[in-house]
Image 1 (cartoon, rainbow, N blue to C red):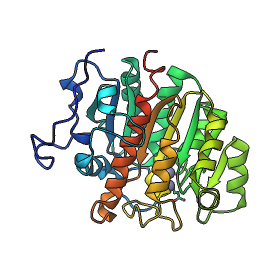
Image 2 (image 1 turned 90 degrees about the vertical axis):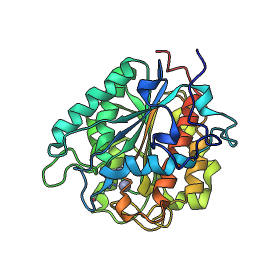
Image 3 (image 1 turned 135 degrees about the horizontal axis):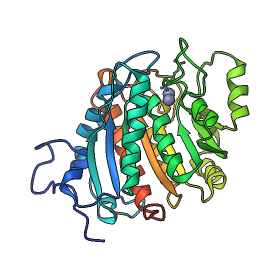
Length: 318
Ligand SMILES: N=C(N)NCCCC(=O)O
Ligand SMILES: [Zn+2]
Ligand SMILES: [Zn+2]
């Protein structure tokens, strides 16, 4: 592998100058080959409450200017360990969820075809379904770690099957997931009824509630999650509303009593060595953010996911 082209050096060009690619990384057209691409999906037509996640990718990129190249907790320089590049945004139809879902699947499959793993910045949670469809085509059923206040396994809203509250029900129905290894983490807040939980259990999901994280702590939780995942190809989906609204006010469906950013970062770091094949950070809606609190958390989560991706390369070569 030739030496990766890294981010703009912030000791030479101040980090507040120039265009905001993720972490000031090169654009995908500036590098010969990309192992890991950060890509935005500015789409929020699937939301059930406050809109605005279409502006999430730009806000996360802007907040990512301060990231530095070395990750001390994981002892890795992710942008030297692999060629990471910013692939810009996948522009999808804001007036048709069906069109958008198909176009996103096709675009994601194009990246996978050239051996590039994706860290996708949403956008609302609808986008996880086409991303999983494209991964399934390549890897077969994948393990899923889903960080969210919400189950997102509801059936439909207003008769619509593709929404931000339904992607993981569709994914199970379509056989995209290895149902021996699918978990929600951070679940809390009111539901529509007991049947929500019964259906979710029937699909095979394990639930780690936000209260479980408080009571058991991140190490015990992470060990249990890792035991369930094993060596399976793993997709990690992070809905930013898994964090408490104090840590992530800028989102569309906030729920009290969530994780701290410190807890979530530690759980993600605990996944080092897992066969991560892709990840997303979704539901950042900057209009409700303050002082970039949410966008900063999202930028750091994406940085940690990239770092974990660089620590397992077995799937890159496929
Ligand atoms: N995926 C997110 N963020 N929210 C789902 C909320 C579904 C509801 O309005 O009941
Ligand atoms: Zn959510
Ligand atoms: Zn969600």
